[in-house]
Length: 178
Image (cartoon, rainbow, N blue to C red; front, side, top):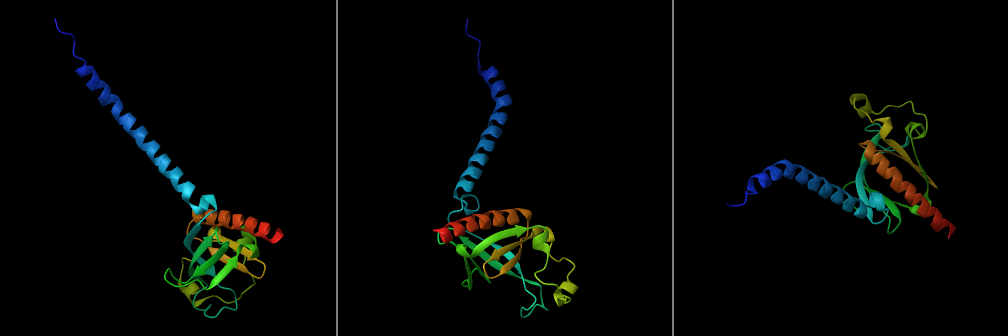
């Protein structure tokens, strides 16, 4: 007599457990990819560079404030060379640099949503636009000689920038005290 075939039992086991094993393998691969991303990402490591678009709120004396209360700028933080810069576009050269040594602190919340000086003027574009800028996505970069009021598009961007700028302020303080 021949031995019973294991093929039907093996097929049943594969049919039941292969999808579960496959999902587990995919989840582990996704987690590993996220970990690799965070290990190499300046937002988490505070090394290298990171760039993203932020709106810079114009101060009351700015030319063209009547057209718009803010302007979009490409902000870059460079942990290796220890500066923050911003430019009008990806192809234009950054005109403004803030060294880490100049950064005093970063604030968000009530202090960040308050304007730097009371203004009775409203911008022309602000009167036409109902969208505006959400106060919950605002933060302020305080330096030795100015305050940059910034607005991100999402909460995650605010958290990333505040974390990176706080790290930059610590590095700047260490450099000032060296």
